[in-house]
Image 1 (cartoon, one colour):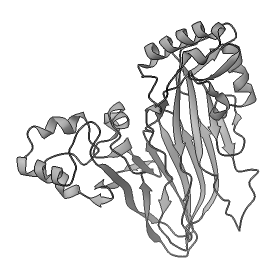
Image 2 (image 1 turned 90 degrees about the horizontal axis):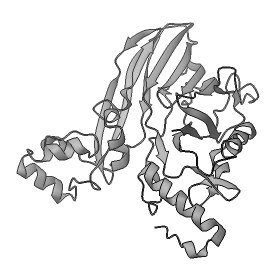
Image 3 (image 1 turned 30 degrees about the vertical axis):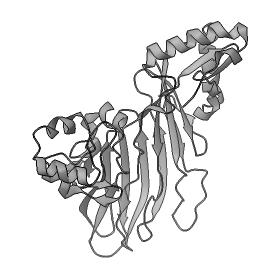
Length: 341
């Protein structure tokens, strides 16, 4: 827990700090002692192709905004015969973090993140396998026996508890799974489908999902001549803004100590990108601004260049081939969007 001692702040800044504190509470509704995000993000993961020596992901284009994420995959069957393999989209473990689940309850139902798949422009319905886990034990049957949804504990779950069979509720309590605001289980979710690939041909696959972005408890503010994140003035460089974008931030606060803003975040787990035997070829990534977004910062990879449409683009043009037609994917990314209220 953070403890703020205003007596340690120079007197000429005390009034500014007091105003900033009040504004932060008013605008975010967050207690200043809360050290963490307003709500937690669920990191993005990469699609994976089942192992097959004749199949290659020749190119992947990834588009990321706060409203929609898409993966465009160009897969080649280099063999002399038609092939069948399985494609997977494993999601990160979805915990029972109350703030994450209840910020977007529509994202955590029986088909988390609303994943959609298109093959050559035609939509197909992928399978999804869900497992409820508590301390890494599979408790799916216990949760189902109580008539509760497998997705993490939420307002809906708590509402169903009143009509759940008493013996089933006791079984949950016996495991220490007493459903409540800060206790419960999480889920593992994997989308998958079988896919045919014609010999000596390319197959184009598009995957779409609704991202579960997080929001930082700290927003940008100005105290004295310094511009930082939150009352502690955390270094704004952690947002990985370009020099051009950082200059915009300075200009934004030129005549104002506080400009109402919010900072959203989304981690992107780039590896594993593809298995050996179905290796990835080339790739490009774009980060898109949504309505209200002023700018974005991207940490963890080489330079993103802003195009005429205002999108941040990164291609592997400067990335060397590691072998044959294969280029290593980038490291994990951390994306921040700065939005004005």
